[in-house]
Image (cartoon, rainbow, N blue to C red; front, side, top):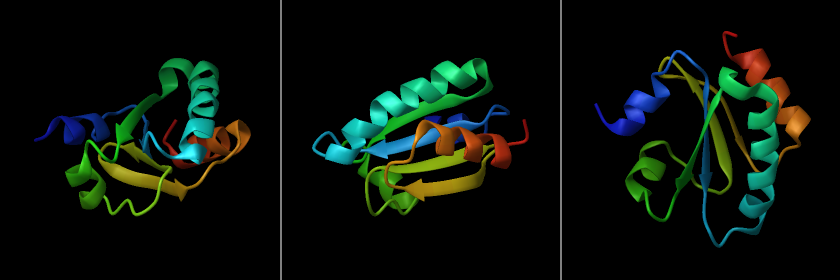
Length: 100
């Protein structure tokens, strides 16, 4: 099992942020995700994956555009969204989709 597989099989919901350093919207999403983490604290893990440095993972999970956020819990994909959302939209989706 890869490190990535171990991360997404967590009991705790894990939000993966697939991003690229050259992507403007990705830079906008960074501070929003920090606010999400500040708000939800230990109830969620947020992991950033640079698609240029992790092309195999991006390809395996069919990430075609950045930013793309995918929410996992116990290895199951619960939610997926491309583009920038507000903090409230992201938190709402995490709380609705996860088993918390």
